[in-house]
Length: 444
Image (cartoon, rainbow, N blue to C red):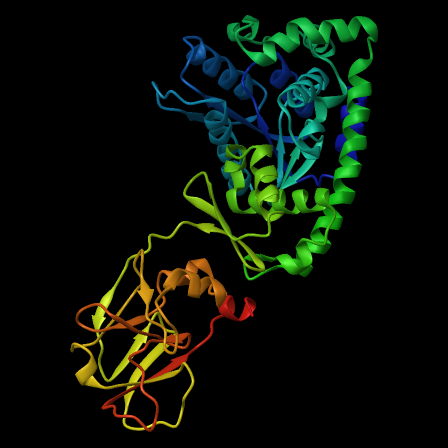
């Protein structure tokens, strides 16, 4: 185990540092915890009883006794019986437990017993299923995950090396019978493909480790490029498309993947490579769109912005017009006594031409306005599009109507045929003021 020990030494542990060791009582984790312990590392045995197999209790008792006899700290978590969780569910439970112990023992080091054969299997599975550059490298022997250092000291060795070590040390271990079943994809690679590769080259695991490390260097370089570009175009939780769309397609994909991984965190596996590809394809159409994502997220293109956020439940509104009205903290509509403004920010109405009272409401499907000085009517939706009002703002934009729901005014945008010139008769003057938020400014 010299390579493992050399790797550990390169991490420069202090004498007070603990290592949280995920340990199942299987051969791999028993090898890891014993190797660390006999080389004087401070270890905490972290055991999760998944309560799936009948042997779980026996394995728990053995591991607890092993730790007591060797003066190793033992911590355990027992999951509830009868949970029909998938592999992702159980992995999250394990790693959440490991991180809680790292906090308890004030350490950043979490070690798992993944070895060289595991790396081969993982790479082959990712290639078969499809992944991204980071996925194709399998896993790293050292990985910083939100301040925790995930280490895999056994990656230099094969399963046979581990079994040989355990036999020499006379260390008992348990075997999981499910590892013998070819019902699982990983087991089929383990039983059928990996032995073939080893017959071709007994040291093939070293070649896969080299392959993984080369990809890791490439992934690190590309990640640095993406980080630099994100500083330029990812602001206020949206992507500035003016800069983003000028990037190489691959960098665009990588940046979008990184942003999604930030948003989804541990749930990133819910998204496939196809998701990113479809979003990029929609961007290339140069049209506004809404694209639904898992867990009630959505991607929206709004002109020169790409927004990724939680879906909002848009509620319509209709309120009586008072002397002063503020809608969504940005639209101010007031009744004034006088004004010289002849722009779309002011309308003059003769009460004899309409049905009182007046209301302010949100738009409705099919809304049309009889625009001043034009024949016929125009769709409100098309007016919003022409004025580049963001889709996310259209459903809340205020519209002034009379009691018969005739649209009199889209404040700041269009006036209807009911607007009167200064030299005509009118007895109602409405004035509009708009406070722009960051989103609105960015669309100009």
